[in-house]
Structure formats: C-alpha cells, structure tokens
Image (tube, rainbow, N blue to C red; front, side, top):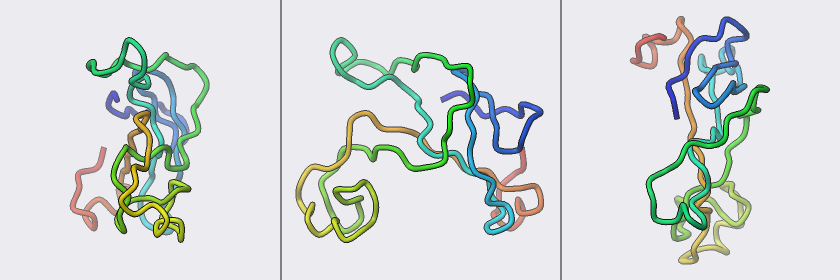
Length: 124
C-alpha cells in the first residue's frame, strides 16, 4: 500500500496510489484516526498464486475502510479470530482449524497532533 498522504479534505480521507480511502476519526476517544481493511494487493488466486503481490485495481470514489476485513490464514487459537472473523465466542469452535482468508488486507492508524507525544510517534 502506498503511503497515506494528506488530501486537503476530511482528516479521515487519505489518498493512496490506488485511490482515496475513508477511515474513522476516533480522536476524541483515543487520540487516533484509523483505516481498516485497506486493499494492498489483488487476491492471490489463479495466475497470481505463489507470485509477488499485484496492486489492486484503482478506484476513484472514497473506499470505506472503517471495519476489519479478512484475517490472514492461520490455525485457530485463542489469539486468532473465530469463525465470524471477530474475537467472539466462536473462537472455541475454531481451535486447531484453519481460519481466515488468503485475500487479506492492511490496517493503518495515525495519532492526532495532540496525541503524538502520548503515543511516542511522530506526527504526519
């Protein structure tokens, strides 16, 4: 995924090399903005199987990136998402089973200027 760049719009709209994404302003609660489920590559199927990642097709309208997308493939454990791709009671039903998807996504977070020192990170 390309670096997030200020687009001059809302603080949760960022422009990537593939198109704009719209995240969540959680500044009042946690002092952060976040973008979840950002596509960083086409799914590794067919001719793309066992190859280097290929950029996703570009888009022009802001892509909502406000919820976690597919988890990566992993063996079910108490530390991995359950059958519903969340940390819920279904975790117990997926222990030692393969969960997740090969079509996984990236998640990003940024501190507000006021909280950059609190989180020990540099501001944009």
